[in-house]
Every structure is written in C-alpha cells, then in structure tokens.
Length: 160
Image (cartoon, rainbow, N blue to C red; front, side, top):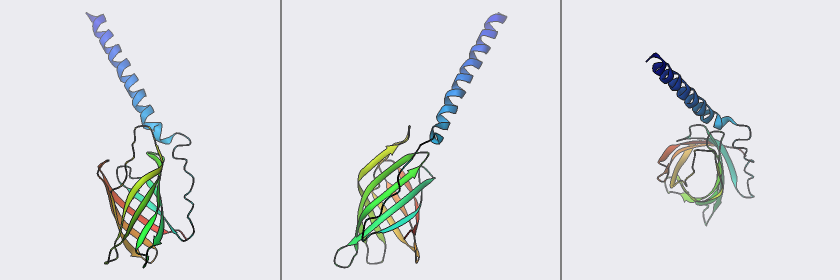
C-alpha cells in the first residue's frame, strides 16, 4: 500500500516538474535573442514619421507611423505603420484614410507588407484608428481590430 502512495506522489511530482519546465520555456519565448528584430521604417519623400506606443492585446508595442498626405487639400492620407514587440513580433501594414472636418484623423489598414508574429501570436489588420492632435508634435487616439478582438490606445510624437 505504501509503495503505491509513494509511486503516485513521485509520479505527481514528476508531472508537475515537467509541466513547470514546459510552462517556464513558453514564458521565455518572448525574450529569445533576435525576437522582433525589425529594421526601422524608412520614411518616403513628402511623408512625415511619427513614433510611439500601442497598448492593446500586447501592451508593450513600439510603433512607427508614416503619414503621406495627398488630395486637393491634403486631407487624404496614405502610408505605413510598423508594430515591433519582443513579445508578439513585428509587422508592417499599409494604411489609408483622411482627416474629418473636425480634425480627427481616421485610418484603416489595407494589407500586410510584413507579418512576423512570435510563436503563439497572430496579427490582424486594424479596422479603424481614430487619432487626434494632443499638442503641436504629438498625436493620441485609439484603434479597433474586430478580427483579433484587439482594442487599444496609440500615442505618437513627431520624429522629424
């Protein structure tokens, strides 16, 4: 009787040790060397570059936003946005949108140019950004991605 109790206890400890080792390994995946090793976004002529953060499903994302105004009154915008995180990975997405009459910048993502998620993560296009001026060289706003159930905050400052 005693040997069966000891067997179960040892077996249970072994399972717990294996589980802890596996979970510990998963927890370290986001910090492996080279994770989210993205090149900087190179701004194209006639565009402006904004840098900052996004806080959503992954609360520690660095972002670079390229805005290229066009149209008769420069109220339409195209460009790219790059997300970089050692936890979730990195991506570059094409964007388009415009400025509303009350000054709100409304954008949507069209497609991925690069999508390199880390293990266990997936990326979805953002359906809508709503961004407004928060000072002469800063922007703040929010975004929504229905496909990833990701809703978050974006804060940017002019890089150039």
